[in-house]
Length: 287
Image (cartoon, rainbow, N blue to C red):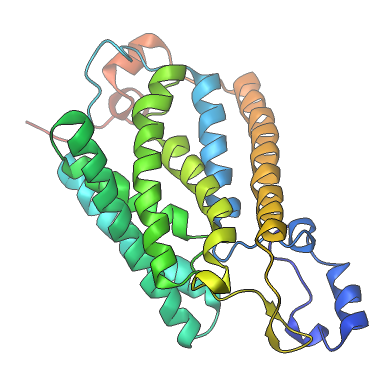
């Protein structure tokens, strides 16, 4: 729906472009921009995670006992590896090594850095102390938000998206989740879902050539086409809404099938003992 099209060589003139576009994916035809998977990966996974959290239910002790991350050190190792991998994820989506690939790399770096700073700043203001866990979460939020926009945004737009995403995703995981009382243990929805939606809609802002964006290339005229923010924002709404609805429905069906044949969670005794032991017969550490 997002990326399927006939390729630039099919757009030789206006009539050929119309014929080629008629065979493209549904959201491609709607004009939705998604450079490296903001809707395909992040909205999709975030919504699927939320549906799973709602259907599986809360962990034992949720809201009453401390369920802190197992290891902040390993969290930082994982976040660092993810950040390095994200360069391949985003830059590789350009499919060739050129100036645009360099722009994508810079945007990915700067958005992640900006979101790290804004998340930690929000945490410092709201809780009185910044944390390493918050920094890691902010970095992922920034990487998520820039993913759909990384090839369309200028560097200042990437910084702006990162700064906004850090604060918005912090709100999603500390306030939105608390208000609705769902147990999203790894904040798949708060970071990937909310960040992906923000990035999809924000792409319409930062892609604007008047704001330093690249604009949208017209392959018929071989130049940047005329840019309309209202038109592009509507296209981005299509992309985000379809991803939310599609992922929500299909995920619900998939979880129900698994629940029918296997079950979605273990019994209380196994959960209290821990799945490392009850499901796999091993422990992470031998003290």
